[in-house]
Amino acid sequence: MRLENRKIIALVDTDFEDLELWYPVHRLREEGAQVDLVGEEAKKTYIGKYGVPAESDYAFSEIDPADYDAILVPGGWAPDKLRRFPEVIEMVKHMDDHKKPIGQICHAGWVLISANILQGKTVTSTPGIKDDMTNAGATWVDTPAISDGHIVSSRRPPDLPDYMREFIQVMEAAD
Image 1 (cartoon, rainbow, N blue to C red):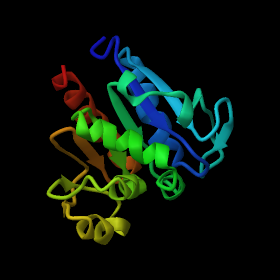
Image 2: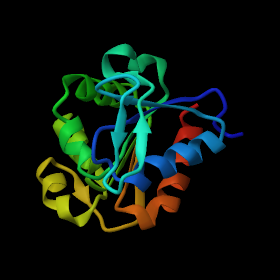
Image 3: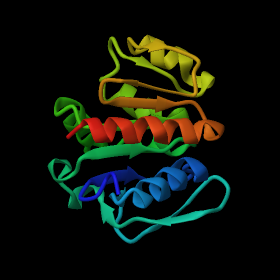
């Protein structure tokens, strides 16, 4: 198992894109990683855009990002909510400061924009937030998945296999 003994934060809030949360969580667990769902409240059930539930393991306030090796931000409408929490912004900034892998897909780029970490980075996202990404100083490319250092980005659910291949490679290189 390539990611044994690795701990990953998977952020969650209402209206997450179901596949963009669960596909990475299951894929990374298959590789041996511990993936904790972290939301505003612990043990709360959040419902995805298409009705799939996700119960948080921990609240934002209960974790220390220094105890984790990476963070994942799902898409959907959840990123617009997640970026309003100072704890989420601090988690993302911590990961960026320590060059730990940050995965973002679809609308998740909004969280990285709010954390002000995209200046000079090459990323992708749903085309709907392309202008937001470029206005934040990033170079936007239309590709299924891309990494720029420790930041891994992807466009949408059909790109999930490429996204996870890229994210796992970045995790492996982060040793």
